Image (cartoon, rainbow, N blue to C red; front, top):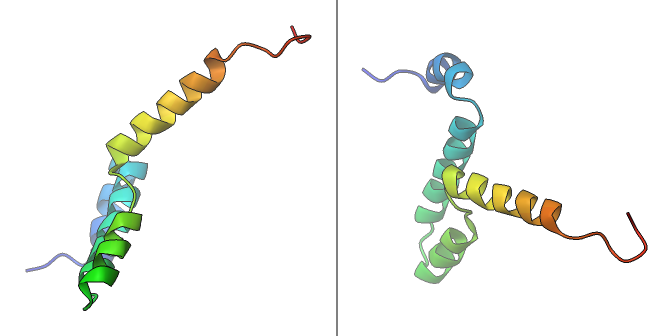
Length: 77
């Protein structure tokens, strides 16, 4: 028996936070791409899909650290 998606989200969302929403969106995008008939369109669509949530968070943290480590421009304290 399948659990309805809404019930599934209601139970799991508070426990898992943003990564669940991100993964659900990524899965929906992947499914949409995989339904495309032309291989060129499918490959282009799959290329546009971003990284998994862990990679996204890692890249985001690297950017934040990089921005905070930049020295101030001359004439600024």
